[in-house]
Image (cartoon, rainbow over all chains, first blue to last red; front, side):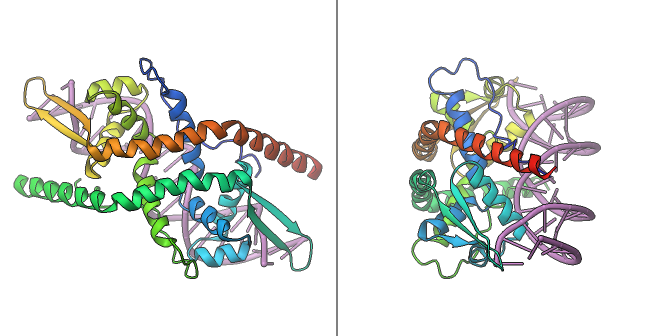
Length: 144
Length: 144
DNA sequence: CAGCATCCGCTGGGATACTG
DNA sequence: CAGTATCCCAGCGGATGCTG
């Protein structure tokens, strides 16, 4: 295994021809970021590393329910895109430390912004869901 | 099929016990937002609808390569979480219009912020990737 | 300790066909 | 036109076992 890195899948963004302003490009860029940071663990990892540098097993313990494989994959992805550094200390037993890069710390800002927004709007989303689901079940009940 | 809505999967966020400040909650919230907006099409749909209200087939045409099924799923998800409204006009042939809610327009802001950041950092990420990939191939070449 | 390798289930997303 | 209903596949994320 080697070049699974070469493809990050980045949501293919459609032409959307007539959209003029900052469209495809904007979409594509968001896609790139989300493709990296939008997976199950990346954000938490970035957040943890913003608190302090950590080694592999510390991260694993902190995350709790993640598998080594997935943590490794996550860290490799973040490393590839320049969000974290990976420092190997060749001792026995081996020691590998992970730290945020400037880009990684930088990313923290817009992501946190998004998080704050999410926190603020949480109730609204939950409410919207309840309404929608209630409506849906009423419909399917009527259909019976 | 009916209650596929009831679960949005929202990245399960681990306990991460010792993380004190705004950790699990923050992560969970970002997870929720990303689970909705982090898929392949949601952001573009929101962006399109921010330009003007559109009906189903307009959206489909604008997106180009999306299938009906996926567009429907995407729109249902956005509707459920309160980002868009769905207005049926019972004529023949049927007409359904989609529009952003206040929450939807509101979401545009942090998302755009993220997009701008992504746009700004694009080069850096690309550079980081080239470095990483070059290193990786050198390693595997050495291994031969 | 920090990892690869392997196997596996689940779901996101696409293609196609059919309906009110 | 705006969907539903099916079938299908790729890929993520998880579990387990093995190594330097």
